[in-house]
Length: 592
Image 1 (cartoon, one colour):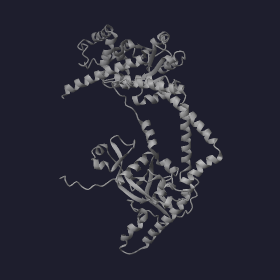
Image 2 (cartoon, rainbow, N blue to C red; image 1 turned 90 degrees about the vertical axis):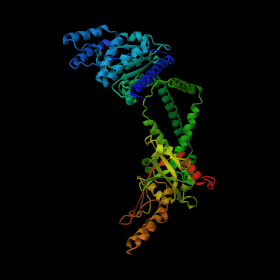
Image 3 (cartoon, helix red, strand yellow; image 1 turned 90 degrees about the horizontal axis):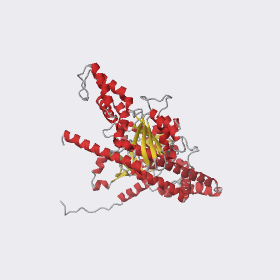
Image 4 (cartoon, rainbow, N blue to C red; image 1 turned 30 degrees about the vertical axis):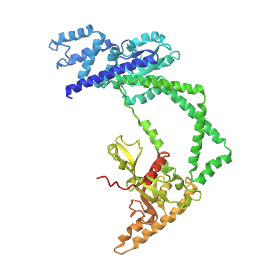
């Protein structure tokens, strides 16, 4: 396709998108019973632009740009100035808008374009469905416009922030006018309201909405912010359609948020009361006795109990038909509006969504290690610069009240985690796919994936990993001179485990001390057995500098960096077990 064909195709696509956006806006208004849009902006009164129009053309007289071909640049300057004024006065409002836009495009004044293109274009597109008013015209007509409002004749009001070209005598801006309108309790239920400005970007719309709601006491349920930066693209109307959709949905979205907060708030409050009302014997049995017996952290059990009661109370609240009806009505209206295609898609900042998903998938290292979280299936470690995930049956890894695991179990499986290109993964063949599993990590760029490479698994002792539980940094280290762990924040079962670890690593340190004293020339052949030995079998790690010179502190290049939460880690363990139990078939000798 040559350049001219590409331009034609681009124009056709833009025209199609704008037609779809126009239809979408009209559908929005129709479905919500909105009679029209009232747009108040200093740019809405075209006559306010006469001075700017004349001034811009006079400034270009010496350059005589051929792109502005609606004027005779060869006229004497005095005659030229008269012709500019006559040209403006003789044109219709629509023609004036087109001429002014043409100048802005020639100047490539993006800031001015984003501020001016909306009022200069919208009337042409939406005709009688939009009413453009200068600030002074709004003041005069406000009462009569409000009088039109009813349940069957709602209005969407859009206000610009700045009225620089047509300021009000008392210097009120668009936010002040929006506040005055929303304060009228007799009519606010029949309207939607938005600030439509070039002073903030699309990504800043929500933050500015929160700011204006706070500084100007605007009602969040009726108020939204739309950036005029949506108009900087070649096809600007879809951007406006998206902004209008957000404005029309805000009431239902805020109602849903309030309902959710109300339900969860009351449910959690009741859960607290129910926990407080538990008999001491019951509370002690649930939180302390059962946790100790099963090797579960007591706070985990407490959070579990809270979740059980909160969920039960929330579901009980939803038994009310009236409450479910209210929620379903909001959902129905939201889906009805969202189903309408606008011809465009607003860039969506997913930071909050991804952050919430990350919290669902992982416990971060600063929380996990500061809480001295017990070692568990799904723990992720950085070992010698590489990431590994610990896969082991939860029941096998839990410490019992005596500080030991059932049947003195002390073996885990470490599987290497690797970040690869998504394209690389998509090109894997069947055999390769059977050896890897994707680990969801929303912090990675969209072109990358994290995978657990099952074929790298190593059976290892849990003892070095256990050391990461005892310090806030999550580092595998132990001070051999501190025989008793006096911390008040570590579980009793883990304090008992700490004593056993002292025995294991004191023996390990003694081996290093003896090795250091050996003066034979070929002692390097002993190095591996001393610095790795049975404790570090399976670990890809160099421990030659692990023991301090004084022989009291052991520190290994192992750090617990995150925890992949259940049920995701449980599912990964199950898939790993399937990998280990896969069948082996003899080769097919009939194939070449």
